[in-house]
Length: 348
Image (cartoon, rainbow, N blue to C red; front, side):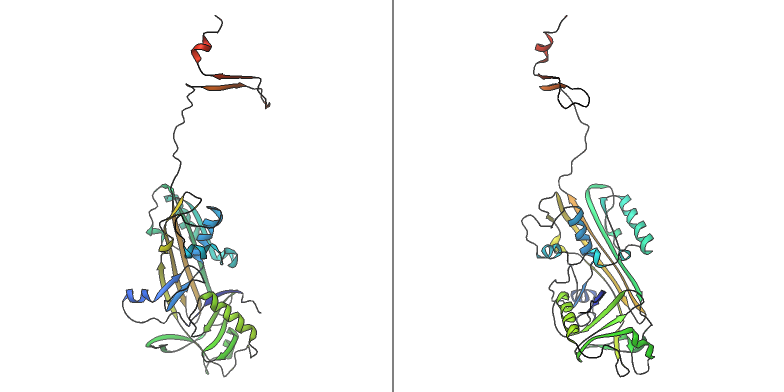
């Protein structure tokens, strides 16, 4: 099977059919998932690897192992512990991570870091209190992608989406399009008008996978289905003059917290997860894709040792040794239990 490169897996069958209504109604129809294999009943679902990067940082650098909670069995934590997405699955220039004790200095370092690496500002840092709190750790990640298609697609006429007849913008290829646009598209498979997938080629190493399906399952299963059908397909992989492509413009922003993980003590550590957050800012049009995602976690240390002045007061029983430099065996030893008795024996 042909490997699907570093793929931004965008599965349109269940995503982005936005209905008009209140913001609360829209939010109920959209769910940001912690892993690709999280089961959801929301009609619109989004997954991005940013929070998984934060989780991995805690596992690998802070608690040194899987994160399990005291007196609480979390399916979400169990799924995240599998680390099905890691930093090695994306190029180093596409993410930024930082963690440390909560302080104004840490906030400043993160702001400087994302400015220098991505020329970006944060949408979430102002949501947290960065006054000096040495008993708390802040773990942060940003994932950033910005790439163009080989050639900008044509802007097509507006139309409805699914059963929603409100007009949305579309781009793609029709009978009037320049044939050079055909190189933008690789056909993965076409089994029917309701079961097909294409890969949109970009100027970078990223690719956009579009999969048309009525199946309702996890993103992990979708990706497995694409790979399976791609491997079995024997038809033409090239986009031809009689073919058409029609893709809706997308512009979304979502924030999510993973409440199941919050307020629990981590086994084998002195930490408790206080707060989690992940944001997704995704835009796609005829020219390309822009993705900016942030994630963060605050953990409280439950037993932080307090630095105090130490009192080396030998006013009770103690032991004394005399030893030469570089030697391991002393040449004199004394246990002192009653100084007055010992001193009364001294020579005058």
